[in-house]
Image (cartoon, rainbow, N blue to C red; front, side):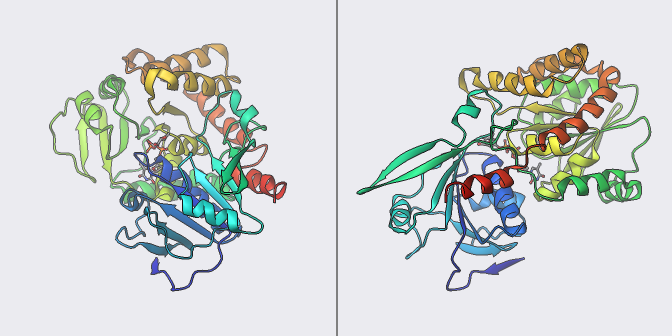
Length: 393
Ligand code: TRH
């Protein structure tokens, strides 16, 4: 899958710069964007990444030891302080999440005629001010000239940049979720029996939270079987404590049992593999930005463990999202889900809330499907981005 970079590079249409702040979200979003642009024939893409080791965790085809390489038709460039000689900027330059572009690269942009369109792709947020700032230009002084940098905000409404969703994803999901034999084969591939009628399968990819301990403990006491699909990572310790398995050896592939709860430990896979996990489960607990978006495309109930910020800024962001997400639900179900989301994100005991799952599961399932459909009504992020660029270039 990985091929060494040829000596001379083609002209690029897109340069995307990604600085991995922590975890996998920054690279997760930029890799999805790069892949979609490439696959949908939007031109040649070069992705600059400062941390190839993190990238390789979600992209097994990548060799972190190589400075530059082609993966799935995209040129991956390890982003060092020193740029490769004679680098020519692409027609569109995207700095992800306000990562600062290297000064010599910006200089090279200013020397192009016409200069590239410069986009700052921002973090996803449902806050109201995003609509006012989406698409705004910020003039940047470069030597004797000035370049406009445009703010592009993903979001949940028509006045924002929308959400990343590649063409054909929803059709693929529908096919997957309706293919019972295929699902059974998928579970068998993970070493699991077909899902029983009364069983719940739940994926969990969150940060550390004491709330997980109470949730897992409740699942252990459940009157019906629960299978937890757990990619190894930051949630593991709380899950083990909740299940009373603290200190147990826990390796990818292991199957642990605690009362009614069966825990299947999974290795991290590529992003397509993670999508399939989300599509296959009855409920997904997700986090950050990209897994949060993908859970919405899974059209299944999900709980969002938002990326924690200082001074609780994330709770206001959670509420702004819930304002949209819960709007179409009956008041009682919406209240329950809001309480559940808050308790999860405040690290509180969620056992009592979980007990009400059977009461709200069906309406939540229907809502998840309608929500996924509604989100795409005004087009996906790449469609909106291309339209935006056409109006600027
Ligand atoms: O990993 P995250 O917590 O990432 C982030 C970063 O911390 C970032 O700095 C922060 O600002 C942002 O969250 C909000 O969560 P996220 O965004 O869900 O990214 C996880 C990525 O990992 C996503 O692209 C899905 C991918 N993934 C796989 O590809 N395979 C897997 O097996 C799993 C579990 C995840």
